[in-house]
Length: 117
Image (cartoon, rainbow, N blue to C red; front, side, top):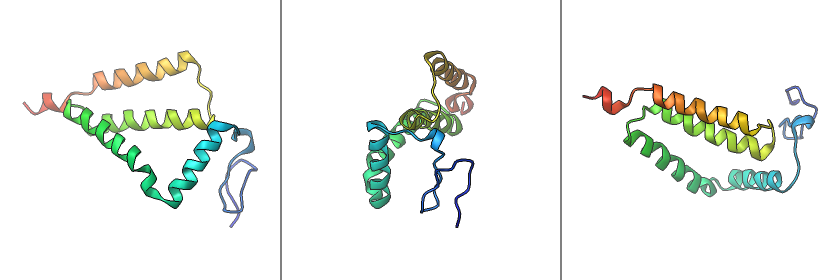
């Protein structure tokens, strides 16, 4: 089956890593090893799963609704992955803009504790 996508970095497994967006170096090498290890042994990610569960649970316990808690957590996870892969370079102002947008989202979402009264 041929790889799909806009890049020309297709591998024999059918995965496609556009060459213009592929980085090398210790951070990316470590991430690739982690992904391969997790594919071989999913239990390796148990710590990350537990951390996400704790973080989302704490947000819910403080009154955040599930959607907001998930959006914030997934955004932070995506930012970390983006930084590791170098798929999009964000400057300080852009990172602060994301942070401020997340705070606005959190502040504008009614607390589940407020709606339970």
